[in-house]
Length: 392
Ligand code: NZQ
Ligand code: ZN
Image 1 (cartoon, rainbow, N blue to C red):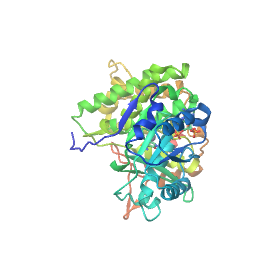
Image 2 (tube, protein in one colour; image 1 turned 90 degrees about the horizontal axis):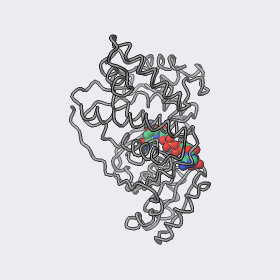
Image 3 (cartoon, protein in one colour; image 1 turned 180 degrees about the horizontal axis):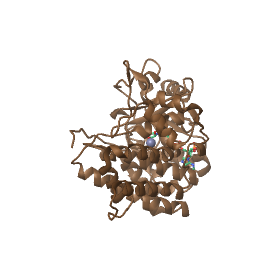
Image 4 (cartoon, rainbow, N blue to C red; image 1 turned 45 degrees about the vertical axis):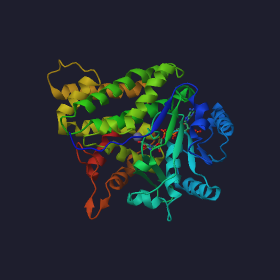
């Protein structure tokens, strides 16, 4: 096990009716709030009215900024920063999913930054201050409700970059599984693929003697595998949503990766797809993950056998490790199929014309050297191109 420093202080208020408590929960922390949300689902579902009533009942004034799109854009972040400065906002309330939350985090740090907030994403330099961010979660997927991460797309440069700081962890996140009942099936599936990937990125490692986090990763993955298909049958299954919602948070709050070298190659490769083609992050991951497994498993056969047996339930009776692993990957792909997730880049509308460009962007030269992505196997641009080709 490697040394680690674990700090994951997001308060998660979970369960039925919790969205009505948001005003009361924010009262001790906020004098004026920016209510930040997406393209309108919260107005259709009535959540907007509930949140506004709760803020009004608590006597918290607010201004609002809607219009966050999936793969949230820098231009709206700039607008939000101006609005917060002008209106003396001291807390941002994101009502939505990863996109509204990530946009809120970008605004939260941008308010205190003199230059263009994009510099922070570009350079990764540490921030000293950010406004507090609170969340009413409407889709379990990105895990942003408990992470210190934010991912923003710069529409001018066509780049999508992530940034992380402990200062960006939400102060309070409210999660009522009933709010997920209105999600369309493709968004359910995208969210499930994303949270699974957050576990895979931590689970697949060359670090040994990490039995506890191995087991936590495996239990969380098995919980997702058994509950997610129930939602494709009945999107109003509260118990299944409760498991999936909690799993999505546990997947990305940091705990599962402690003491282990992490990977993150699939996320790096996917961010290039989202940046170039604006595909849904989870759908991109569902296509790339099996291709990545096929390409890298030879570098750590035991880790992939462990995955096949402990997560995908492959019988230990198989003699050949490669057989066991192949069966494990097949079962994962079959699960994605059950979730109606895409299987190939072609299904995502991505042909080969920009594969090489994306592979090179993913591994751009830093300080004169090619940047390699991944942990279990370090991948250069040719490797990334090979994986895109397997996934085509
Ligand atoms: O915009 P609205 O109208 O609200 O519709 C949204 C959006 O179209 C809809 N939706 C959300 N809740 C709903 C609903 N529709 C009906 N009923 C509801 N209850 O779902 C669509 C997707 O929403 P979005 O917020 O984009 O989804 P998600 O949570 O998957 O976030 C994706 C973004 O998060 C980033 C991704 O790259 C992507 O940009 N990530 C953020 C991470 C982080 N901050 O820690 C980590 C992740 O790896 C990921 O990269
Ligand atoms: Zn993700």
